[in-house]
Amino acid sequence: MQERHLNRHQYFIEQGITTEKFVIPYIEEVMPVNAQTKVLEIGCGEGGNMTPFLKRGCHTVGVDLNGPQVERAREFLKEAVPEAKINLLIQDIYEADLNALGQFDLIIMRDVIEHIHNQEKFLGFVKKLLTPKGRIFFGFPPWRMPFGGHQQVCHSKVLSKLPFFHILPVPVYKGVLKIFGENEHTTEALLEIKETGISINRFERIVEKENYIYDKKTLYFINPNYKTKFGLTPRKLSSLISWMPHIRDSFTTCYYCIIRRGDE
Image (cartoon, rainbow, N blue to C red; front, side, top):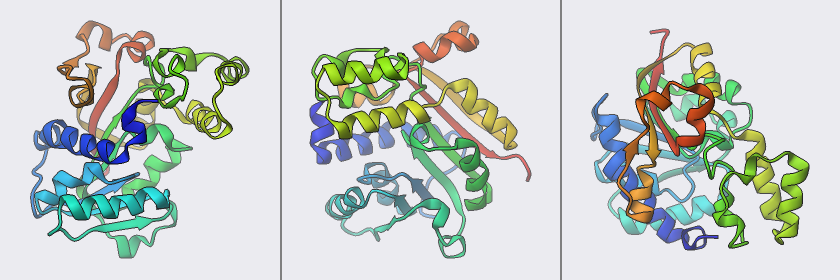
């Protein structure tokens, strides 16, 4: 397990840096991000992605099911942006009072969609939270990329650095985790990710089925977040590979896109 997964404040800071340097500029190629922008982050965790939006004066709301993470977010955000109004909710987005929550110009989902069960249902539901011209930003690791199983959270130093073994059949995968001493909590979390992990092809099929329109999409060979984590310069996937559906997932470490409703 990497230090950033144990030191949640470091993780919070790294999230904010990547969002400020890469995510917001990416979004600004499509729409403005300023004090008039109403932003919702679904799966906000400790709130690191919210920091740069709050600093710009955006009305920003974060929603997450994980109570301890949200409580840390309150603490971290109060320290990072003391003048901002912190609006964080501990709840299932499906159970939210939509009238009270309102609609948003921008919904952020960074490293979240791959954790959600029934993504088809979710993408249909989330339209209700968008203004007519609202957008959704997604950033996620495709399932078949080297660490698409999030095995970097393993306690075993070997498994945390071992690419691709998450695509093994479930019984074999569980056996490997047991042999290397992963505890029940970590094993259950990794098996859940194996269940919910999503490929580029499947994501794009759902986007099309739910009648969304792409404003922009980018496949990264080197994830922009790797600049913050490892000092590596972001690099887009070769256009030749990006058109090869059964190969690109293995070479795309991060998929960015911005979509909007196609029924307006």
